[in-house]
Length: 225
Image 1 (cartoon, helix red, strand yellow):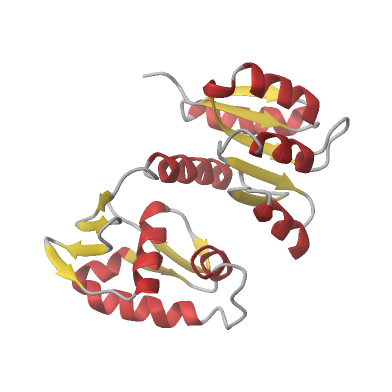
Image 2 (tube, one colour; image 1 turned 180 degrees about the horizontal axis):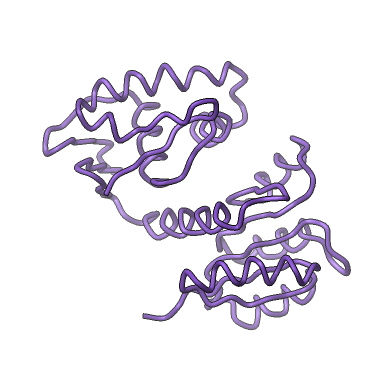
């Protein structure tokens, strides 16, 4: 099976090497670019071969925003943006441009690697109507969930929440990230509404509700063998 190609774009060679080392150990083929123009040249020369981009925002010649705009005109390839900025409007701009993930520097290479794996797993499942994990079966087209073969009744948001958890299994998810992904940015309520939905979801899942782990002070994580 061919290795998935990841294009890492950052003007700092030390940062590129750090990401390269971690992803290479996980079996990815890493291609590096030091600026936006070089990244576009590489991407469009091998468009079908690049499976994911890790893209820094602040770069010479052409910044990450412009690279993202150019690529999104032709491709839905997953994009993770890296930035030293943490302002909300920067994150909003990233998601409006079609960024799949937004990670602020400094970051843990292990967390970045986990996010890469989660996004690739999610995109590979995007065309699948049915996904299964830990005895939980989700039929997306029919909007049905069954636990250990028994169908359970979920509200729309409970279904979306469980689907998001399963897509990101093994990843610690903050309440803010869950809120932004499941409720979207047009929701202005309290992030604690997630706790209420998780409580109801766990109850309906019975013993399998324990697969949704609480990360105290942060959010939740779905864990299944």
